Amino acid sequence: MPTLSIQRRHLMTSTCYVLLLFLVVFTALHATSYAQPLQNNLTQITEDDAPAKRRVGETTTSLLHTQVAGSMAGPALPMLGPTANLSWQRYLESYKHPIPENFTRRLEEVRNR
Image 1 (cartoon, helix red, strand yellow):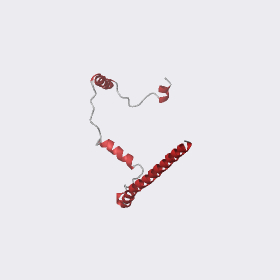
Image 2: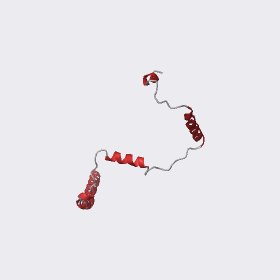
Image 3: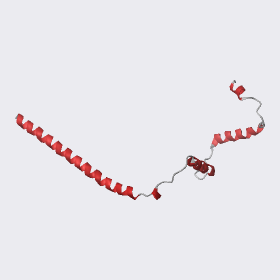
Image 4: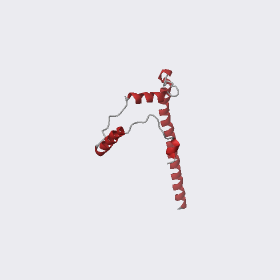
């Protein structure tokens, strides 16, 4: 009876090795089938297809111009109900006080309060 067990283990081990070998070969063949078109695509790219080189700060300048122009702005959102009323009242009350030409207090005095 113990010999049957050894034969069974040998069969299972052999089956595992065959499956493992099949998996390795299948993966290798599958990977090479994907690699071939990729290599062909890489050789077709020319310098004309490469992105233009940008100077440092050019992207930021472009974004600031877009912001100023408002070309990418979303729709204006309305201010609703009580928030609109309070904001409008605050705006109207701001005209009750004149805007000083010079500030008489120094920043240190305001900080020390």
